[in-house]
Image (cartoon, rainbow, N blue to C red):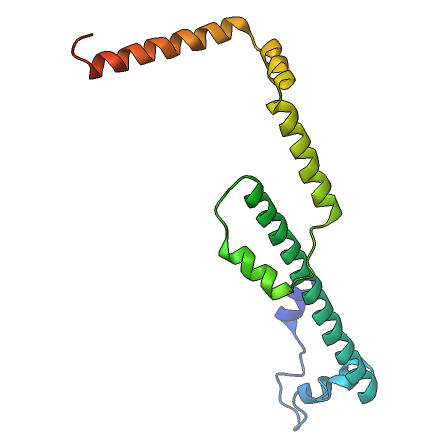
Length: 159
């Protein structure tokens, strides 16, 4: 609201053009960035160096995290026999050979592997059968048989 009033009214003396005063925009913004930040030149240069070092450290950490994730994806691709990704291999090469998969991610993968082993075992299959609805299983079996019959009749002229 205040902005609206200021823009409508403005400075009443600014439009009259008394004297050669004009706007002092150049004085409002100092040319030296150190003065603008309220520091001496040496403090400002040290501050800029610190900012650059922090940015480089963040970038290095980010690259390392990306390489860790790429390593995990490579491990999962090997485990499930999926095609390899050139992008992941390039990411690992860029980060160097000292990239390890984080322990938390390894724990998650190990937990998944133990769950899958439990499902693949004979006891896991028996437990799955106990949890299934027998009526549903019968319906699926009969539907599969009728589907096979219809396909066989389409292909074979004897039937």
